Length: 338
Image 1 (cartoon, rainbow, N blue to C red):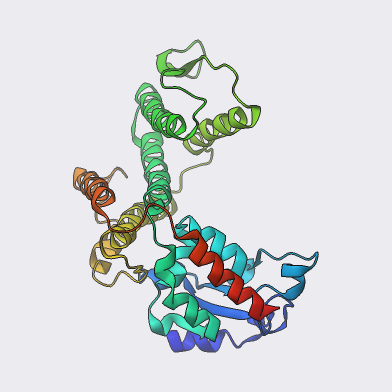
Image 2: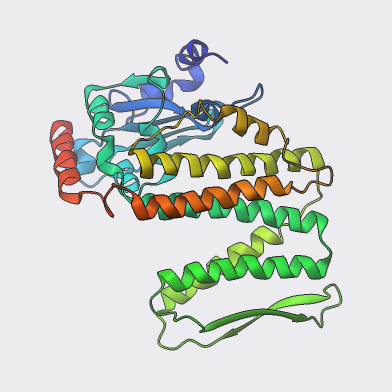
């Protein structure tokens, strides 16, 4: 669908909430594209995702009401409140930072305050992007590798692969939770006593004086790895391959966007230069007949990881955003809203 057609679509009845919802009518600052249309990777059957930002009302700022975001699942539309969006941008959240880097013609509506926000987008760029984008990329890679392991490896090899996925999660846990010292969690595989398993992942854990909330979060992180790996369901090869290729494409796209932030201090949502590469991944050109991926793809991932590591050590952007400058901007916007 062409941009002009999407603009016309926004005026139709399914999108009346943009003009009628109490949090959105006359309060929208930014309305733009999200998803594949925003990236340039859309296909004939791609959904149209709409993303935006709306100013908080006076009662939200001074009173007892609250508004974080409006979601309309039927039209794949999400509009964040200004204050919620800023909190996400402070951490360089990939799903929201891309709202500030769309093509000019992809902004269907910009208020004066919305334009001001785009003009100040560099305020939100910091080295936090390494963790946020890297975390999203790791999730995509883990989904891809786990799906491939389920399909093409014997059970014992699959369990070894699960071990490696859990060990990567463990490294991240030990870096983020100061109460968990290196070596306090040992993961390994051994022969299983279960009839349906040849090998199984086991854990030796030695923890003391660990806050219960931290312990719960750690268990949930390991559980998420297991749930992703053991997700049940019959394999629909065409559908599953489409999903795998989509994960593979987004993995590379995340690296590209983050490298622009680190190296050029720019947010580039529409990946015009890399569209041939991204579309070829999406079309399955790096996938083998058995559903696995050619080594060329994983070599590309390794090269992007190397570039990311170099970029984060040599970037000119600050470790964290200038909180006080952003706070002044937020206070100024909210004064106008009140």
